Image (cartoon, rainbow, N blue to C red; front, side, top):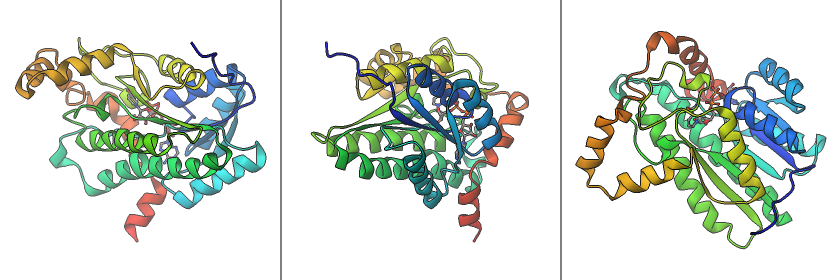
Length: 285
Ligand SMILES: NC(=O)c1ccc[n+]([C@@H]2O[C@H](COP(=O)([O-])OP(=O)(O)OC[C@H]3O[C@@H](n4cnc5c(N)ncnc54)[C@H](O)[C@@H]3O)[C@@H](O)[C@H]2O)c1
């Protein structure tokens, strides 16, 4: 087995690193010796997290694509050439598809997909000439299967998987790596009020962080958290669609988003609804 790559001194950016999976990842990477920069919309929380974990926090709205580029330039100026970009910022609003308004759809596309496309392209442009670097895109189990109650979310996360697969092939031989991370339910604010399913056991943000650290040390493309999710998808994919849907119904995995408690999600849903200021401005004008 190849020796694990050292993370000491590597310049790593975590978008949406103020809380949740991003914060746990920033902490794990700082512990492994990386120079971590958190970019987040919520600068106050980002600064608190950065102080706690030993990272730097800079303001970032990933839906402001010109601003995202300026943020990357600023990191390179202040800290050094970017070795790793973790496109983690994301939102998930839940509800029946036909009840979703267009603003919510546009916000999901802007944060979860367009920003990931933009960040990935910017990273490739900076890393390819240097022949080194690693892009980590955070998708979801909803990037491999459509979850009712999260149709647009599933669409964006499938988009992240498709983007990453295509870019991986374009990067062959360049020295630049790309990975796509597909967690099941993770105990963060984004997953507030989701019911538990026997099929999808929730994991901790630190489990995703550990998987990301391992992926940077020994690059691989598909990263499922928990790892058993890979086998679950392989199994359901060989079944005829009605049988796969029967399994989902039986284990209630089709109710993971639909069965969410609106009361428990109130705070998160309000925050998520205000998470794409630049996209909102663009779509209003
Ligand atoms: N929690 C889960 O169950 C789960 C499962 C699978 C995948 N994911 C994915 O993991 C990623 C992180 O999710 P989380 O659960 O940690 O969520 P979270 O809400 O706890 O954290 C997301 C962070 O992103 C930031 N953010 C939101 N919009 C932003 C913007 N426009 N610009 C910059 N920062 C922004 C928020 O301020 C927040 O700090 C998301 O892409 C999510 O889709 C989460």
